Length: 607
Image 1 (cartoon, rainbow, N blue to C red):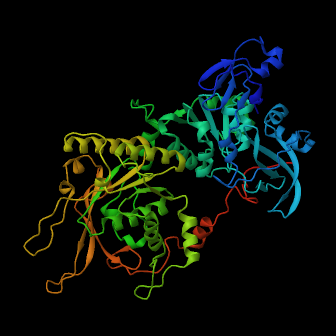
Image 2 (image 1 turned 180 degrees about the vertical axis):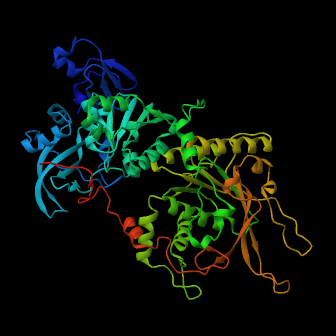
């Protein structure tokens, strides 16, 4: 861990704003580090941080706002006892464990690894533990305990923060690893600007929100999570949050950084020396695309996403979409395009473990929109019994909350702020970082204001270009609901079915969108033997393997729940999450709680 300079010891030269250089008190106390009169300490008064380019010591100004972070104003974090003691007199068994992992005693000491007795809920007794101490500035914000039996626990109610957050201060590049041992491994080969996820391969929103001030000015991220299925998945989510153009991927010869170090220092050094950029620079060589080319060769056509549940019938053959696509949905008012899109996206979120954000002013207030989601989630009405189906219970609402809390987000402007396209795309960028959003829903196009004035066709074209570019650049899916012009009735007095060229304002809704569909409702007419139902019609798919343009799936609308069931499929009163394993995952214990198990079955501990 870096030395921390008390803020009060820094000569601020009478300034109260801006950035400047001054003498480093830490270097002045240690003359062997160079000339004590050199001004190697960079001070940024705006950020309240300082970094010495010679000794790499850091300093943090503790403001009133920072103090409030630990109060109920923001979140009820519980700090461990701040009487931290340098308990680095580790037992021989613990030192031997680290030596077997090729971690030196110098690294153990510098990273403030300690050994303490602590009650392990999993073992139901007090045992000796290795302790990873999480510091943020001067404060000890969390302790992570690891026992000889591979049981893990953390300080109860602790603030979720990356392990080693102080170590990245002053660096333009940051390494992100999956576990504390991997951070120690990189430290062992001289890479100190590294942070570790606090709960293994779990990607939690509040960890990123808590660390935003430390990461927002970083220019390059080296994602060095494990090279297994979970490590690859969390690497994708990290790149999604941070912006793929700012990231590259480090792949180890073995499972992770520590395993490479065990095989040999040169093995780990070779791995980190060859980062693989995510291909979003704007200029692509064959080599930069080689991995994806071979993936297509080995696996065939790209994977598309579509709802997997039985009640969508043969939807997969009709329509599917892909990351990086703009999807435009249209339909005559009251035909159910918003209801169907909500149901579709909810299923995509569930089936592929994604996150979605809705900008939907037509569903205001937002809590009413949530009641629609709750009804769809359980297949039950929210407000009262309908057609013999009872309303959802309070306990079921709690289950939905646990499922949706880090999956479904609603977006709206604050106060009298105007919802312009620039504002909305900036908000989406914020949500990409804070929440790792995969799907954005805009309902509807005409509810967002253009930023400038001019020809309407030009403004629509410019807006759609921004949306397609945003989807491609950030590797997300955007569902855009757009109203058609007033449709004409046919000779039977029924409105004609609109297509994407009928969307009000411009043919670019058909030309620019990657994929598109129409929701068309048939109203019951006994005289003409027409039964009520709703059609989903594929109006455009970019690639032939995504579906068949012009084909459709016919659905029945289930009024009590707001769900759609393909015709011929009976309604079942079951929740969206319908099996025990998934229910247990919803009720998964938060990593910030005492007793959370981070057990890694492949790891071995010898003390």
